[in-house]
Length: 313
Image (cartoon, rainbow, N blue to C red; front, side):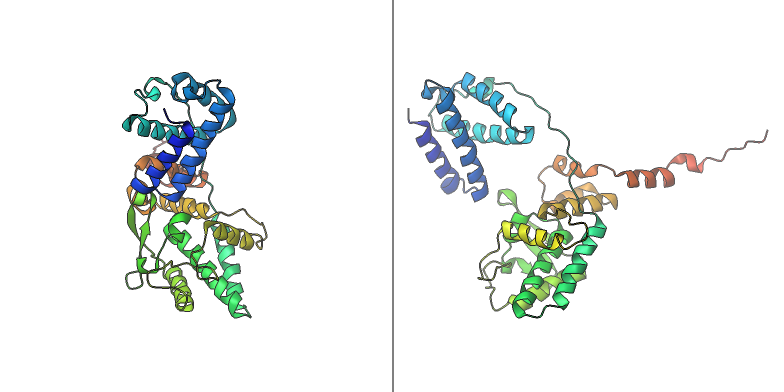
């Protein structure tokens, strides 16, 4: 049998060239498989036992002692996909995962959102900086940053989806944008707020000489596609200018978008489609009801309020 290192290399090549998985997915697989390889090398006298049931069970115990349940679940998914590849290509005869039982419950974590007054403060300072910019460079930079924030908040798209937008994906007539989501799935998002779309138009007008028709829509000063890290740094820069210096990430705009729509009584299936979730169960994380919403419902909707009690007999 080939060495584990060789099999991993061949598997990752298959993921890239045959399955055409995204670079992020391949990087995650690579990281998880290399970690498993190192564990086997450090803990097993016989390195050829990497495909044995007891080796995987030992590794699972190690992962549970080191990582949160969500991380362990991802590592399991990476290994199961790898072992399925080995079965299909006749590298091993039996899949040990068929005889491994495991169960763990992830702690429920309420998605972190941005309070609307913080969003308002963020926009206020960004638009103020735009209006007072004294150099063309600063003006172009803040115009792009505003467009990025407006699009994140108005559509709830992922940061990876935002940086993946090409100029040809934006329809300036209908205000629709073609989004390239996870798993090569595409969907159309509509920018319904005129102020948000005007910010996108302002950005495009200013950068039209830099942006190519078929190239990336959001670019840096060099004309290259912006990175997710540059967007994260940008948000933190402006957040530090706010009185409370809140921690703001691109994904928090997505959580806020979904949570506010849930609280506005929008059907969860519409929100599922907007967010690009393949399963309604993923969207249901946003159905937690805030205390304020509970009070509003119970004070205005509870049937006890409509009961007419006659006390005199």
